[in-house]
Length: 168
Image 1 (cartoon, rainbow, N blue to C red):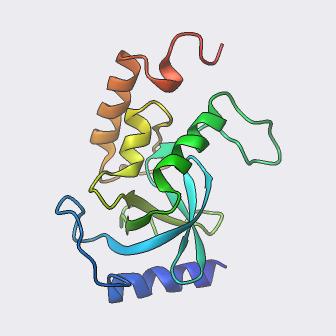
Image 2: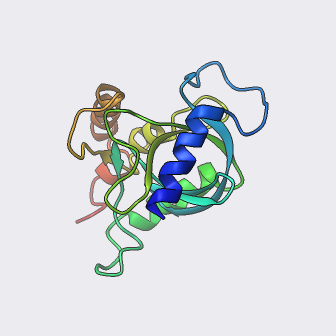
């Protein structure tokens, strides 16, 4: 699977968009797509048709677990997963790689930012709404300052994970 994922990411970078389409000006030129969301796995992982289904781990965020067979569903995990479904089911998205993060994670999932057709950065939306928190795996990444600011605002306004009594 890892070779397939890496090969597909290389092909995406070389070929660009799968289909010509109008795209929001806010979507960076480095982002490729549109690609159909095949399946939302949880709040921070999706499967995208490229043309075969490829798992994509979102850079810079983490959500409470809902699908790890070694652990029970974590507090607010189902809500985060549900919100990801609301935003991504049936959507065609754009993927933006970040050279500082590598092509894949240790599980063979492609690493990317997900842009919605209207120009919103899905990763940041999840943090701003309180469904995810900023997560730096190893090295700083492109949108880290934006994600930190989004989390600070979500905490200050007690949204989602940060609401009083949510995970007590």
